[in-house]
Each structure stands twice: as structure tokens, then as C-alpha cells.
Length: 386
Image (cartoon, rainbow, N blue to C red):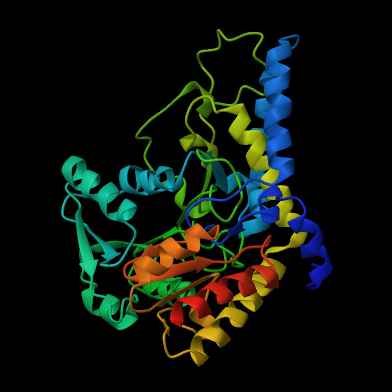
């Protein structure tokens, strides 16, 4: 992996047309497109308009290529990775395919993004499992409270790698160790960390990892990835099935093969046909992330947020609400002030795009941002504080 080079990020910024007129700090919600992503989609639209060839093979070739690229990003084997449409897809694999019994407890933080809780509420109705909320402190997941909450019926922990509303990065290493010590499945929602925070799912002992790709991964909405640990795959049930979960060897000239076996790896839980536009856009987006390197992106983003944090710490009108400890930081920085909702409207008026969450302004810096973006933001904050 090459070392951090600011010049490469200056070049990458040119791939994002919005940077000419908009300061975008909202990748934690959804991303702007890079030109390679838009071009990949447009090229396929042009192919469909021409209608002079069948692009079925293109879809399947991309489906084959993407798990190899994601394996480089998250540390798993390509065989352990499948494509889903969103984060909830992998959560549903966990909720409905894990070998759980009625009465089994699923531990979830009381400040978790709602997708985890509602997915397992559905599993509670269908399977009788019991979602159990773990008490947080200071709006952060508390490992001591987690350990207190574990009982003999506890079978899984479901948690985000990074909390959506304040950017708190959870200690996945310690959480994985606790799960293994208590014979619990470790399920991680990675959408607020994938592409910007280095992760190795194998080393961390994650059983199921899932993420949408419309945020930090810079891909179209309706794209996602999931990982199922190799040791777990034979234990999982098959709550749904489609004809794409068997191995056709990309030969669709003879479809009257009714005795094919299901894939023996993570592809067994993939759904039916995928949107080729989404797949091609995702493929191009992954290449942008891999080209710069996740560690370099992390360094770039945190450097920008350091610039913002230095200003906020010196201005008594503002209070940082993110945890600034290195191990708990991320590419999200939140802060608050009197009239934060008015401030948010003022920022939008000046084409500085961010959101407010849970009483704070959320700034999510990404690879296309630079110091001039931070300085524009600071200028508006200064004027507001006066």
C-alpha cells in the first residue's frame, strides 16, 4: 500500500463535478457520484438504447469480480462475500439464517441504527428470538454494560462499526473477543466505516458483516455487500432461494438443468437478478476507493476534521459532541451550539451540505473534500457565532 500523498487526493477531487459549486459533508447519508461511476452507468444505458447486444454476461462477470475486490477491502475470502442491495440484506441473513431458537437473546445497543432492531423484531415474530437492548452511556456503546447484559440465553451481538449520529467507532476487537468467550455470534453493520476505516473481518472474528454502499463507498443506492465467515456457512439455514443461488458457470444456453446444487459459499444467500446499472456503478466506485487506499482515505479525512476540531475547540460558541479519542474517532465529527437548527439552514443556504442528528450538526468528510471546504465551513460558523 502506498503512503499518503495529498496530490493524489487533489487529483481524485477532480472526479467529482459537485466540488466546483457545492461543499458536500454528507457522505454519512449518501454520496455524490464520481465521473467514473456516472460513466459506467451511462455506458450501459447507451448499450441498452442501442439494443444491439445482450449484456447478460456483463452482469455476471461483474458479480464474479466484485467479491474479489471486496475481499481486498475487508480482509475476507472472495468465497465468503456476496452482493446485497443494502445493509438490511445482511442483517436479514443473520436474523433468519443463523441457527437461533425461540427464547435466544439478541443483544443490540439502545442507540443502534433502527435497521438492526426492526430486523430482529421481525425475527422475534417469526422465530421467537428476543432482541435485548444494551444500555449506553454518554451516547456511546458501553462494553461493561454489554458484559453485564450477557446471559446463558445470549446468542448474538448486533452492532455498528461506527455509530451513525456521532461517529463513535466501536472497539470491534474487544467485542469480538467477548462474543467468542460467550459462544455468541458477532454481527457487524459496517456501513459507516466501509471504505474509510481499515477492517479485517477474519482477524476480528466477525461472523456476519453487512454494509450498503451508497454512503462512503460512493456507489449507487441499491448496492450492498455482505460477508459470512467460512466456519459458519454450513450452520446457516436457507430462508430464501432463487435460481441465481446455483452455479450456472455463466452458461445460460441450456436452462433445463433442474439438478444443480446450490453454491457452497456466501453466494448461497444472494437474491435473484441484479440491476446491472447498480453493479457497474458499484464496480467503478470500488476502484476509486481501492486506488487511493482505505488507510490513506482515513488519514486524509481525519486531517480535515482535525482542522475543523481545532477551530471548534477554540470557539466557546460550539461544543464537540463526538468522542475524539483516536481509537473511537471516525470520518464523522459532530458538534452543537445554541440554535443548531438555524445554523444548519444557514449552511444549506451557502451550499454547504450536511445534516443534524440527535441535537448536533454532523460533518462527514470524505476523499473529495479539501482544506478549502473546511475553511468555507469555518467562515459560516464564525459569522453565525458573532
